[in-house]
Length: 226
Image (cartoon, rainbow, N blue to C red; front, side):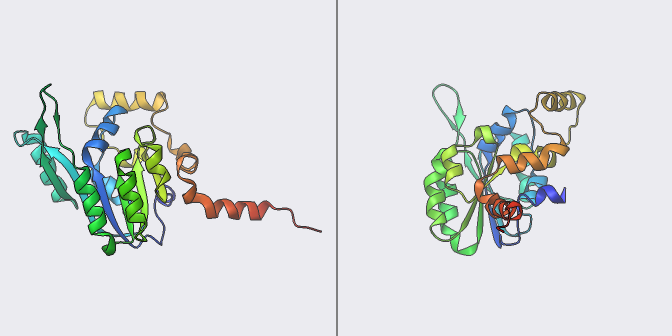
């Protein structure tokens, strides 16, 4: 596991601030049929960095007791929850947009941290990420590849592909039905086997991650001149 985590962090990360777009992450995880263990996720993202704050942004239904219990657990396990009441639209759908809150917090705290980790795949954050980067902050984006906008990946310094780290952030199954779903996901290639994790991490992460390593390999295999 240490080798896997080395693909996520390095010794130069300094103070780390984490900004999780809760609704975006939840729907991305549900799309591939997994449930995230947020304690594991926090530990993985903080690897080799000093945590300043971990923010979790989400819309809430005050009548949903299960959700309230989850948010209480989040507050007691290292997260600062930023919530907004869900709005009910004419078609019956419920939604709360916290993009502005995330962008404002990233910018207002930028002098307090060296590395920002945005957990979202929303293209709308590309401009905010660029603005924070111009303040000299290192920007990392974490998300599932198919749910992350290429434009967002292009403006960050490092992309952490959560697909290749699923075994380390997935919530332990508590039912035979969930175990069967996980086994089916592995069989179909949605979940990688542990032996393939390092290779997949290298292939899927941003070129910013492995630029120095790539240059080192080229140097080592270069045929010396006579």
